[in-house]
Amino acid sequence: MTTANDDLCFALGGGGARGAYQVGVLRFIARRYPDLQVPLLTGVSAGGINAAHLANHTGDFRTKVEDLVSLWSSLSVDQVFRVDGPALAKTLIQWGVQLTLLGGRRYGPRARGLVDTAPLRKYLAGALGCDEKRLCGIHENLKSGALQAIALSTTSYSTGRTISWCQGREFEYWDRANRKGLPTDLTIDHVMASAALPLFFPAVQVENSWYGDGGIRLHAPLAPAIHLGAKRILAVSTHHKRTIEEAAIVDGAEYPPPAKVAGLLMNAIFLDLLDQDASNLERINGLLELIPEKRKGHLRQVGLFVVRPSVDLGKLAGEYEPRLPTLFRFLTRRLGTKESKSSDLISLVMFQHDYLSKLIDLGEQDAEARADELDEFLRATS
Image (cartoon, rainbow, N blue to C red; front, side, top):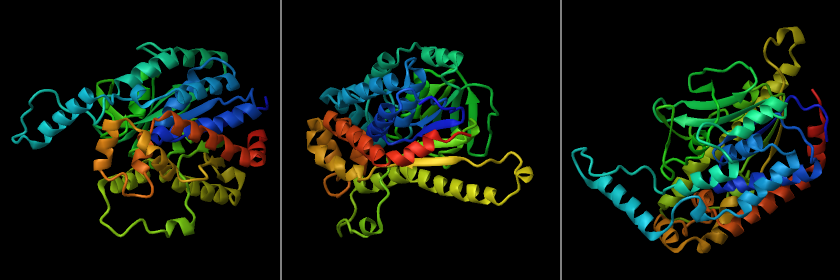
């Protein structure tokens, strides 16, 4: 497929290990359209990793996705964060000291996350083939015209604003009350910062400030794509939209364990907002249809296609939870991960080979089930 796609953007959302689902959707698209041109990319959290890979890889679309599938298929928990006894014990001691000592005094290094993500940095650096200064493939793709722009979103722990780091063609950078777009040459630090799940993963220092997962305050997850100039957005969510019947099921009458509460918070922060933003975009599109062209000003209609899981990925994670590393599983169960029917919290850090492979297969199946709709959307020209 080589139709004009100057206005097409892939918007890849967050969800930790759930990012493997996005890879499955991409695998179906690449199999059906091996030469597809995707000039605009936005990503946040795990979606930021996927977007960075697509933007940095210099092969055709099918080769990019095949390599991305290989990376996720071979991923394991210990390649994302350290799960050995000494590492986890050290972190627990640091947190214990930090939480129990009084007077605000510091005794030794401060805890910077529940886990050490040094393995993920090493894995991504090798996978992306980058140096400390920039992701070299992005520069090559921009120069050749294969890529027009990419934006990776992070959250500034200094200001609380969403900062979208953008690299690409000239466009109007944005500055709103809670979000801002900044030009940069993307590096491994930007990717790591975008994927730094709050509390779980340590924050990352970028340009003398500390940043974490871009989904924390990204109230308008489709906004970066629109700012980059997209007129068509294919968004891949990792959030299963429950039916009324599913929502009515009561998950026990006992007091909710910490894992249940944390899972709901994670859903609210990282997964629910795309649905709200999509609804807002559809309403705006409807209003713009009623406005004469000469009165629309800078506003434009933006086509949107959302692919999402057909099943609850949290419930699916519960089936694979017994295969987590022993000590890590012990710690998560203390939070009550076995007391809920949907292990939303576990699904974010379930970097198990079999679970990731299942998500990739599910993503491919869900995309294939909507093949005709995808055809119509991808073949549309501006």
